[in-house]
Image (cartoon, rainbow, N blue to C red; front, top):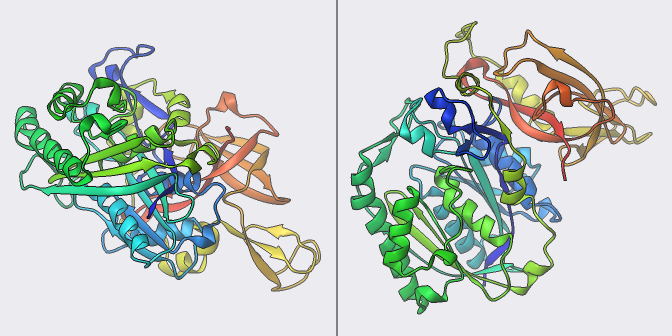
Length: 469
């Protein structure tokens, strides 16, 4: 029986206190939402969640990678293939994207489960990330949040076995975003709740319980997509779920993370789940989709994940609403971007091992590691004798730093650092840190981020981040 063998999640460190949008100062402990920084998007967050999920597991064992998002920035360019390269997965890994609906996340999870059950893949990695924008100072902007989640699907040592699922398809225009538009739109709240959210979510969960032959009282925890606290409470009462059965929807802490939302709540439930518990998750969007899992004994042996709790605690509140607007590229730029093609596709192809997978080269003569890989080893001078070595999952040490106030950034300065990892010097930007937090010999890890947007598209590379455990 297939199921979840591991899980991981990512929440951006940056938080937007909701009071800032109305011109009021931030209040400690007040409602906030997670917002992706200027160098983060659905892809970079998905990579971070996948790294968390794969801790302790061999990446070479992954046969399929499924990526779901409604906010992946490129068309006719597969996000799953990019993520697979960033994770340094095998080249013959099967990749697919799921999009077009907020149910894309649970659809990708179900597809991964079915692929493993059918024998098409021994292990499938499902990653879901979203970073949606609501119009500035709108009610929708305050409700949304950014984040990602990942699940390793297998038939071996599963921590939560898959029981059954049930889906409902419906056609109504409640939330949408047309091609080329920046902002997600939402129809009037009462219509969304009465005609879409409540009847569809209830129908999906009721159908699931009937298929499984159980009652709502048999569910240990329900990780349900929440439109808002009031409507979630009404759905729970209609389904016969007690308040203690509901997984915390994290409203006012995380926000609604779109296609990743219900699954991030499921990952949060797994953090404290016990063998024998039944976990139910249900997403909403053009209908609803519910899945049921039973927690198994191996969960007690799985090493702790960073997942949701760790990221919620690691927060940094923005000090102004203008900083948020600038980070999300919602203000006029001081310098307009040039209308060129950006980074050469040929150069990008040639350097993808270093830029996307952060692969260095280990000299076959003296074992010195170089990044990027040159033709000649500077230590023993041997030429063209290299074996690849992945540096993205290694920790390093900060050797030197400088503050660049000229490089465009939402919160200047840009911090440039020299790091040492595995005896190799790597020059990168430092993310998730303010100038006063930088110090020599500080341990760092490497995170996949947007390095620039030349040519009207995101271009990715690796940055360093202060190492936290």
